[in-house]
Length: 165
Image (cartoon, rainbow, N blue to C red; front, side, top):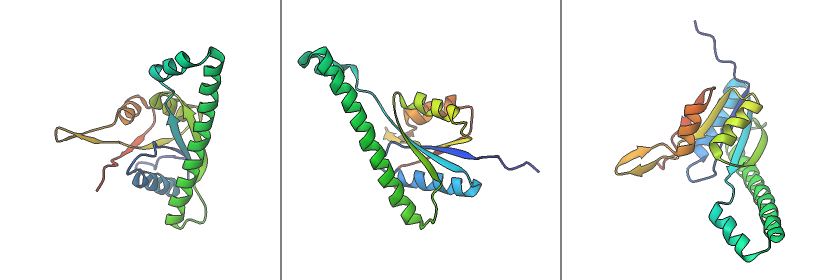
């Protein structure tokens, strides 16, 4: 008989896009199944070169840096509040008396890299995320972040289709 996996911490990565609630529900059910902690993470991609160039063209270097720094901090705070509200709404729909979500993290950077780095740093045992599939010429394609995470992860990745039903 094969022993059950020892899963103590699960990382749930979300972009808060459409149809992510079923993915979150599955992450919660896995956390409850294994009596594991659930780390919820959202990665905000940094302002691209075009946006940075536009700001730099209209403002001095110091003013542009301040807008980038303050803007990033404000976006992170807003996203953390959105994740917290999302989490509370979903957990109420479960009717749970305790939450398996032990921490909500909002990071900036490339989503795949940040998810994998956080999983390694926190010694996560499993990653749960949606596939963000889109139809292209009639076929479903897995989202870039999900594909990269599943390809480069050294731990199990549970990919959940989050297409509308």
